[in-house]
Amino acid sequence: MSREDVLAIRAYLLAQPPISQPRPRNILPFPFNQRWTVALWKLANLQTGSFTPDRSRTAAWNRGAYLVEVLGHCGACHTPRNATFGMDEDHKLAGGTAGIWHAFNITSDKIAGVGGWSNEELSRFLKTGAVPGKAYAGGPMAETVMNSLQHLSDDDIQAIVAYLRDVPTQPGDEKQPRFSWGNAAAADGDAGTEGMTQGSGTATGDDLYRSLCSTCHGANGGGSPDGYYPSLTGNSTPGAATPEDVVMTILEGVKAGDVAGRQSMAAFGGWLDDGQVAALANYVTARFGNPDLSVTAADVRQMRAGTTTSQTIMILAAQSLVAGAAVLMLGLLLLLARRLRRGMS
Image (cartoon, rainbow, N blue to C red; front, side, top):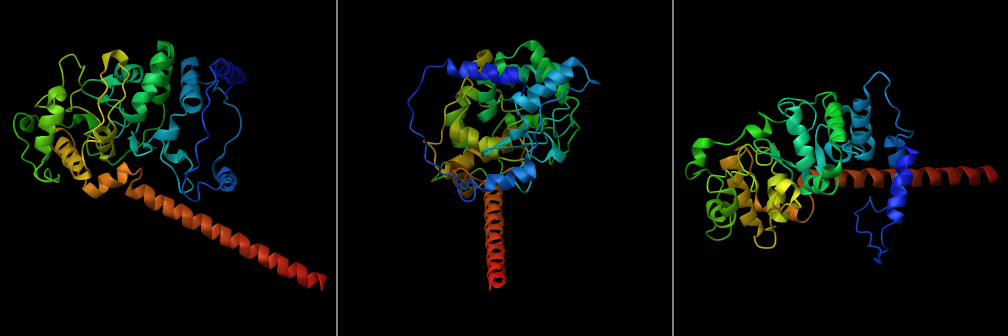
């Protein structure tokens, strides 16, 4: 960051009213609760130095690069992580995670990314979090729009778009663009798709959708004509290659803050059990989105607890790596101590 921006942020923070808040307890799992491991992480991932404008590029491109790479640190969510939990710069902005939520590929790949979006649509999404027929921001992205992006000037939004358009494209696992799913024929009647009855008791995905969702999203998933309630067809969330965002939307709802007239969505995590959430998620993806997706009650239970199978595997791998490094260092210290004793004798 530039010194001027750092000082501006400091001045703003010092102007806020003081709040007495107890320091939260460190509940990170091993090895992330060991501060000494940060030194190892820095050796592998830390890049020092200031942002340097590229004189061969336009002022708008450089402004966009500064906003995306520095102030916005978009890659923290939208870039996948490497084995050491640093950002995988070989796959910049190819899609990552924000907790359980999946942060989409925002390169210009026409299938996996935003290559099928116009500049105007991308600008509108950044400013409002809603582009009918493409996507509606949820989870951390909705909060980013609500608390940050909506306040940017139009010039800054357009600068971000100019920079994103120039980021190397990155392919993904998608078979078709996320927003292109939605079976119109199925939307005219009952879905009748397998895998929708993983609920509790007699509750099915169809029952749950009709009772909890259809009032806002419509019986056919079309939302409201004015976009106040989003359509579920032509929507990147149920059309994604992974089901996490659909499940998390059901569990946590959406905090939209009435940005550009968007309505927030209630959280159903306290109302529905894991089997019901799985049934509803499977119904939504099969009827309105990617029919290849499915989740089980066990998957939902894991997401509700704050992790996924892949994240658990990465944590176990990190624990093994750090434990192995600690054993190796201890062995080297013991060997060094033995040699020193021999030398003194």
